[in-house]
Length: 495
Image (cartoon, rainbow, N blue to C red):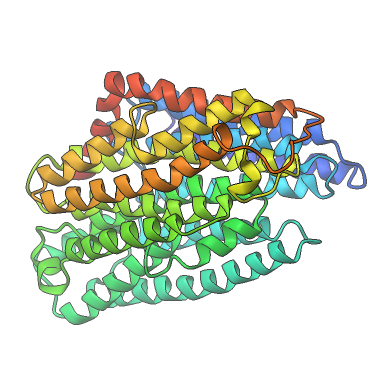
């Protein structure tokens, strides 16, 4: 417990203060770029927000949920866990962006947009009502559209930003209409209020069912899950690589944080009102299978590494959906949901590291295809080792924490009685090893068509890749020691 209670929102306040500080620095001398000052302010802000979240999490703040502003915000262990994920990913992305942007103009705007987006993501994790959920979702999304189109001289970046914005606007409309239907059926937007109304059933089960289905559609967009996945490859390929890392890791984690809270708290599957309207675990199960399978098969057919990572991120969204699909009321619910949270934590580092490696390759003008990566390990052995760790950990091999997080996910599915879903996940993981291994083979075994010429080693971007790899490996034993932190954080949602 912290006093006063509003201090529980300190991680969000730190992010807001950082964004305002960036505004101030830019307004004092808008014509001059100060890359070190701007990236330094953003990095310290993200690191401070992560530190506060981590200290709160480990000292037991939020074990008893702290309700603020009439319940509109709820700071509990789950919210703090996800705030650790999004702020730590942001810190690594900001570190990698310093060299990637180099002498690019509008750097103050770039870092400010990142801080505003991560503020929205942090609020998403603590949303206590559907109204706050929608506002936080938009706060996270609007800066992201601009970030994707940040390279204004690049047609691919602008086109990707436009497509991302149009699909995002459509999905926001779907999400908002779903909220209005739920309000019509229950008379409230508060998550705990909706659950209370549904204990006695509802007179409008059809309206509630359609509304709930549309809300799930909004979550599917934010997490790049089928059928709202098709923006992801276009946006990730066209965006600057650090932005691709940011959206595919932090934004995805925030989307799942919101989905976990809304579905578990507002629509408990044991409630008679939910059972009469829509069994959302069945819907999520279908989405999990479709998302895993489509994402992995599409990734296996790509020749562009960045695009392969985009499709593989869709596959990983399918893995995390297992944590929701298995909440059938049987088995250890905290373990099942906690497994999804652990996978998002690990995925945040290994996926961010992989995209930052792509950013490094772009910085060296190496190219983006598997063929372009041939023999790169001879010139850049340390980051190639890091990329190997990312690839094998994403595939689920025991060189990084991705192995353990997938083990927890599949164990959770079995615990929830969905052993066949765990089998589908295992088969998809085996398939993913094929295309992840192609990167490793290109780096270490294949001979380049022409020798690579690397004239400089950008220290910040290089360091960001190494840091992400060290954390990915370090989390493997770390999770064994601290996995209960995630399970206890998940247990808060089940009262």
